[in-house]
Length: 460
Image (cartoon, rainbow, N blue to C red; front, side):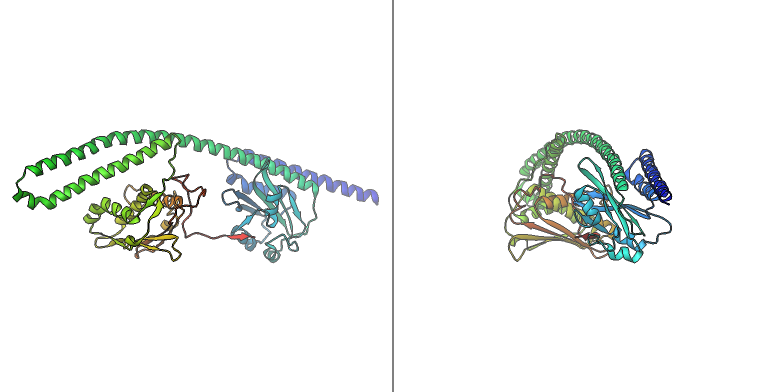
């Protein structure tokens, strides 16, 4: 009898060892045949799950910027009905040290739970109990000390820890981690090559724009001098009738010169960016009413042609703020210019200002009576995926606005519905960003999502 028991135990150990080898081989084969983690994730889960008799597996990725774990992919056997548990998990993010996968992320070692339903550290226990899941194992995806993600598996049976399996999945986690590391390194190289080409192109374009601006600036100055001379030769009886026209020509030539100087400044920033130099914001006392007045002066002719009224409300009562006037001009210019394209004839654009009750920030609202935005346009508004509806538009205008506001330590949100116009709400602190906040160092670049977004459940 004892020999029979020993023989059965030896056969079971051999079977488990064979299954572990099958799992390792299957994962190695998947990694060799896959180009990206998204291609490999589901097949890795399937290979391990089928080889080691797990019934549900999930892959979680470390979001290093947000410092959380996010769902990537899942696999389960056909006989498992755990859709409620899967959907619940998809909508969650996990913090370091919290829950099963959070503990694996924090410790860097595999963890086994015989029964997640009774384990206090498992935060999804009620949902697991509802779908009949019990045993669980999770392990890190890593290379050295760096953890790229966590893989977890579940069974409908209560399963006692198996050290051989824990050792094996730890080794698989290293293999997958090396794959992810190679993928990220290759992507970084591709991006570096693309950025180098963009930098070269920007340098060429900037140089050409600078050269093309020179005759425009010189021509505007010569035109102004010629008009002055011609106007001075006319008798007073004629100049009186031409005063309105002369004032308009002065305004137009001044607008050309101001616009050309601003373009030169932006081209200079492009050239510095190509050289690896990014000018930090230059904060100084700034009057918002003056900035908006300059924006309106630049766009007044365009708005007049389209029969759009440019209005202000409450700006003269605002106190001075510490701001980079040039960049604040760019932000407001983008918002007003974009609005002009959306407002029908007879409509209006109003920049309204007020100060918060605490006296520490100013509120700006850019209000238009335009077409409004569809939800999908609004959702991508402050990102590089922004959708432009202007002919020839890039969609980057609102992303630039967001970057400028962030560099000033402020916030921006948007309210808009189709047919009801759009309102951008901007909050700017009077004293600029907090010291050493790091804001502004990426100009033009700090990115954020808009105020309309999906809010996941945070495990804490």
